[in-house]
Figure 1 (cartoon, rainbow, N blue to C red):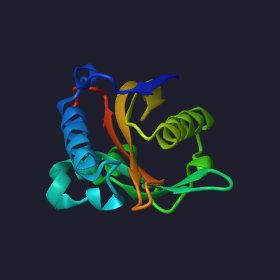
Figure 2: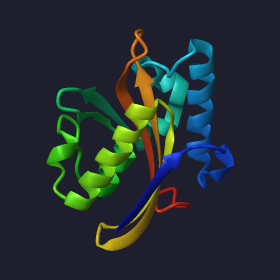
Figure 3: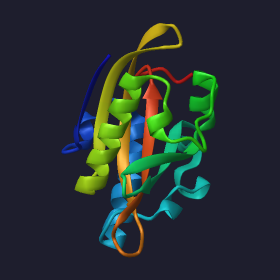
Length: 158
């Protein structure tokens, strides 16, 4: 498995249009608020069908850890399991777990969206995934949730 992540400098670097759409919505909401949007940003009226591909994590501190509080229906169906209510550190695949933790930590500490690309074995085949990981902040400006939109097999709409 190979995973890379970095802050998003140019939305054009995102290969999937759904990721560019999420980033545009996130950026507009952040500009209005003067800081990352709150978790209320994760709303059917705001995000529509993108919710099918979303993970929402609650950030816990001391120690820093992440709880899955929403797993999109298409992701859950595609992978065959819902992770809602589980902690990332309990993920059964150590490589996946470590990659998720690192990218979520980067979004929390930087306060800016990151692009993650990963080639990994899922569902008995190699898959290329592209993810936007975006911080969400409370009224105090502290990142308390992270939103991730994951596209399995870039270019595959299944």
